[in-house]
Image 1: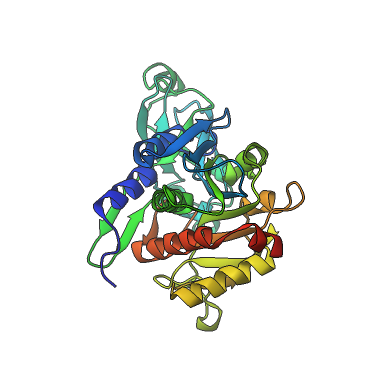
Image 2: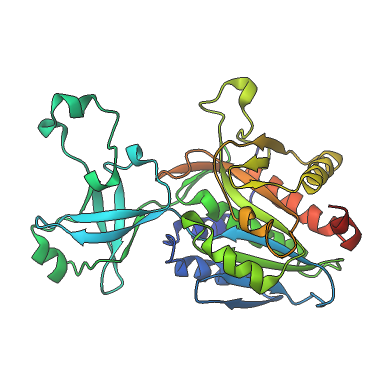
Length: 363
């Protein structure tokens, strides 16, 4: 599988991935979207940092097709400053806690600058035998962020640390063109944000039987909070949620693998938050088969997404989730593929092109 991405798309993915935007602090992600959206769209945002993108080609009298991707990433917030100058912190979203010790992070200070720190656990030299035998920290409260301060006074007065500030992983995207791989942070859901914008780009001026609106929704990782507002603002008739979804091909038995690398996007029938609209789900899978677009389907026993809010709003909104497979989401580093990104965009684009009121009503 060769290179599947243009330099423009690669730069967009890079800017989205590198943006520092944990839940509640998505401003840099919106800036990346504004940079790459281009002309042909009317935009607006709300106080939750939901960012709306409406095609200028929309007529206002057709069914509204909403494209959603959440803009936040799992991150942290400064809880307090310990006497020794290290920072106690809390999670924004559901981290794999055992992956955190020794992670390099960036902490925003009172001047708006991001300063480096390390997530620190007790050094092995000071651990008891039982601590050494454990699999890892059982709770995030046992960890600290060390910014190099010698005491709390220096942390506050020299480093300008204050409580309530966001913390993000210090990771920059790398692209392995030879193997078509992206290594970076926040692919849940920044790879989905990029797929949404690229879908909008391809549909910008087309004559369609639906009006298309995109939203980069906030605070999904802490309870789909942005979508609770966005769904009432946009009043969609049908929706796609883009996601960066957990790949399972490196640890699951072969018969149960449902989200493998380089086999196209994953469409879930269900997770713990949603049963995706069954007729719509089958319609999307059948369309992919007819058009030769690689796609995977799955049944998930855990997880959740913005579709949980969409599909039960108003009188019910037909909703599916199209996920780009990402290895090791909710850790500091992830891996994803431009091949799967392109297949995701192709499927979403063709679904929008195919849609009309009669088909929506059939779901």
